[in-house]
Amino acid sequence: MKFYPEDYIVEVVVPLTDLNGAKVVPTAITAVLYDGDDAVIVDLGSLPFDPVADTHTVAIPKEFNRLMGDEIRAARILRVGIVTDAGTIPRSFSYAIESEQRLVLMENTFLTLEAAEFQALDTPNVTGWNVASEAQKLAALTESYRRLTMIPMRYQVHRPLTGGSTSGWRSDWNSIAPRELLEEVVIERDVWDEITVEQFADFPTAFKKALRRAQFTEANELLQGDAVSKKHRQGIVTETIGESSVTLRTGAIDFGIASETMKALVGYVYFNNRIRRA
Image 1 (spheres, rainbow, N blue to C red):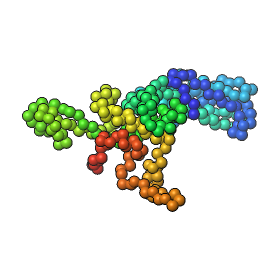
Image 2 (tube, rainbow, N blue to C red):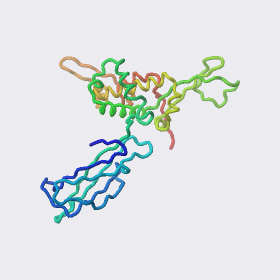
Image 3 (cartoon, helix red, strand yellow):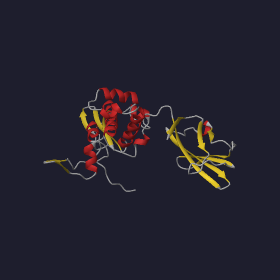
Image 4 (tube, rainbow, N blue to C red):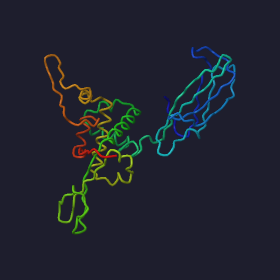
């Protein structure tokens, strides 16, 4: 699939051949543009063409290649009908449009690509990251963000004690100083999408650093592979090589991320999930 920047005039070259590759002489050429959900964006109708040409170029105006709302990337599908005396030959072409800034804070990342590169400088064993292309790094960071935001997390903040009564306050607040309380804030998995950039900026510095470290670590593990976690998910408990037998650690809750990523989140993963009534 080809990628184009937003607001770009995309030109699709359509071979005027049948499904076997043989040249055909069209009597008409039609085209309809769809989005990634297969909804019609625009019906381009019957297009002017040169019947003796080997190809026909369909130009899709830039107004149909704009992102909507908070979209960072969107799919486009151009379906072309080559009408001949023997029938209509269908052709389908897909491409993607994307914003200039592919990583957007709290949309698909906790950190920029540049910040991730700095993380790599201070992290040992980042073979997967170092050999990856920029496109692969961006894809890995986006996927690692998706995985992390499927996990309920928590952090603690200090709140001043402003009165003598704690009536109505959460039971998980603990007194740590005469005029200060420690509040535990829980971010459930279905709340991550609602957190704004401003709210993220107000997170404790240590928590933000842990999230960014975890995202980079998971991206690197995606690029080079986490063999132990993969074997756990396949149900492998014991591995025997020659005369040696190794028992893989089991029993831990699998949140769908690598073991090294979990280490970066120590103290922040919220394990107290409850089954609730709808």
